[in-house]
Image (cartoon, rainbow, N blue to C red; front, side, top):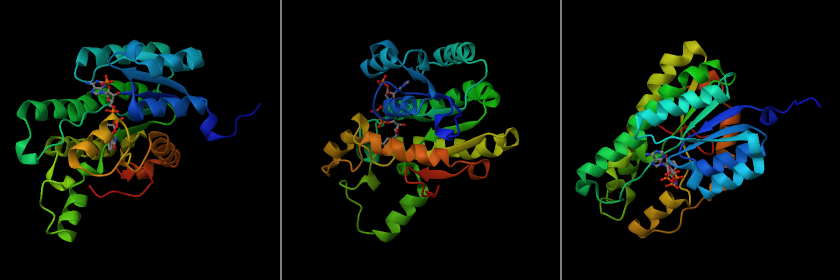
Length: 265
Ligand SMILES: NC(=O)c1ccc[n+]([C@@H]2O[C@H](COP(=O)([O-])OP(=O)(O)OC[C@H]3O[C@@H](n4cnc5c(N)ncnc54)[C@H](OP(=O)(O)O)[C@@H]3O)[C@@H](O)[C@H]2O)c1
């Protein structure tokens, strides 16, 4: 049978933070599309969603331990992925992340700030760097950094201009400085790597998944006293995959939301 549908080509995808939430849903939908997936997680054998998928999909799914806070596990993961897929990796979904406590920015705990930056920014960079030799060998050569509009300084400036009275603790604008800073810095990594890697034919983007009902997304509702997240993970991921399907090298360096709209940096 001739495969003429791009989605059904057996591409190799690596997803970080795949134990639950958006990362796990990426793995589910990529396997449903017929791709080969490397799901990385701090402890994949204890992630029930992943072990059930491994039982169902066999060789199409490889589970690899990777803690983005531990550079040794990142290097070991890259080595084991290279062994499993010497032909390289097509797409990296750089997804692992933490939000920290959603609290007033002026009350952000120092240690927690450090952990958020080490996870969402440095961790994502180290994963990207370790996977780069494999991405260079792949056919699609795409890197998707899962960011957030909360890291968009442009969105924030627009919000503040349009809502000059909204300066109390109930609005998201005054919260989560550590998370915001980590994603703004991740966006800077996207732009720098996109410029640097264009000559290698590698596309690097930032992606905001929308506000999604995962462990992380739902935590924000309780703290802020606002309604449930508008999106479920399956919808966010199917939208994100459509955006990724449409990526070209010319779009490298762009910050998209799940609907494919361009988010200002
Ligand atoms: N949900 C939203 O509304 C929303 C909005 C904008 C952006 N995002 C971004 O989307 C991404 C996924 O978030 P989510 O909503 O799916 O959150 P989640 O349900 O809390 O899942 C977070 C994932 O990241 C993993 N992780 C955390 N620290 C890690 C580490 N040190 N090493 C490896 N993996 C680690 C977790 O693994 P463990 O199970 O081991 O903890 C888990 O798999 C994050 O980057 C987040 O910032 C989410």
